[in-house]
Length: 305
Image (tube, rainbow, N blue to C red; front, side):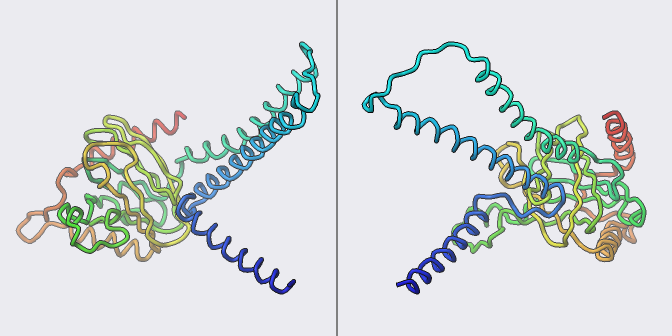
């Protein structure tokens, strides 16, 4: 009997672990790939735990009082008015709880907003319904490596493929792009955000990054990917009829691979023998002067924070 019970408990534990893992993958946050994302995940877990404990204590006490002190058991309601001790306790305890929640939250938010000393600065512009990326400036060993590289990033899957039910579709058919945003691993990347038409939002969950891109304004955010790989995000602000077809794909590579990618991009964008540059840069144009102004304005904004 004991052996059967032990095996049953072990099987139940394995089943529960599998269910918990599947539930986390489906309903929980994405696995963090940056320190900021890890801090956000830990903060979420901490605050959720505090809320659950408060819920259990408050509703447990309430239902216990209802059941154990009901009139059918002969209890009579006590009549009293004003109790200084109780009022002080129920004021101080919530204050301490909120203080304990606010300190780590404030620390995380301040760190999220610190875009100073980046290794690489990229401008991301939101269009209906695509993203434009321009590599503005690299620092240190990234100086000059990708400066001036710019391109548009569109949904790779065509509308015909999306709406044709007979066309086989992969897992990421709505999250694939024709040009990925490529960054080096272990480098702080500052992203300057703006928009050309309506409000968009740059959101990459695995990096803990979400920032609105507003026409006529420069906002900034940053991330520092710790591991190589492909990470996906989306525009997170309703921006029109094809809002759902505006994915973000970030490919994190080694410094050597990044340098080679940047060199290939520059070679592809170089003027041909006829003196005409290759097409494909529509809406981006020659924006070096404008980008210099954007960087100066963004740096001024950052220094005034």
